[in-house]
Length: 145
Image 1 (spheres, rainbow, N blue to C red):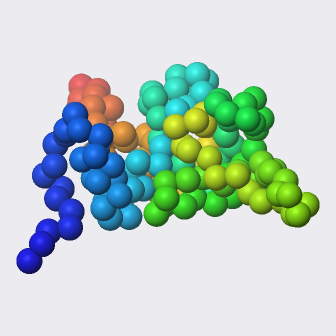
Image 2: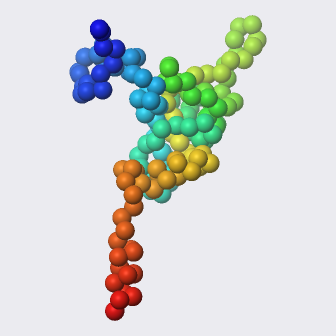
Image 3: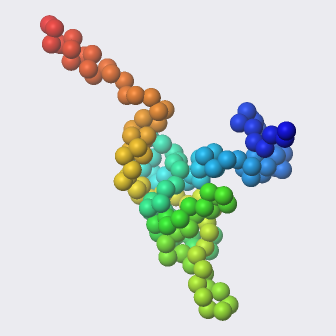
């Protein structure tokens, strides 16, 4: 039986193997690949450099024809690793307008959508572990004295 995807794959300098890894990755791993830089304010606030994009995040386009424009993420296409932003459209020859699919690496997150409680919790604990209980230990020791 042929194995389609290996989690144990480390790295390769060959572009064809890198493309193959991304193309055959399952959706839960492709979700991690759809990440963008945070703005400097958000970097300082959350102590993170980048984060996976979610619907509702406000982004600034850093590269391409629409450089400098801002908009909200309306759709994330995991299979193609593309992002659709509200208000960013091109005009076709027949006059109809079509949404432009952007690469997440060309975007910078300006404002996070913090409606999801789990996302907020994950922001606070970047390693996924529970917060240290040092404050509770200090208060208990003061009460005993």
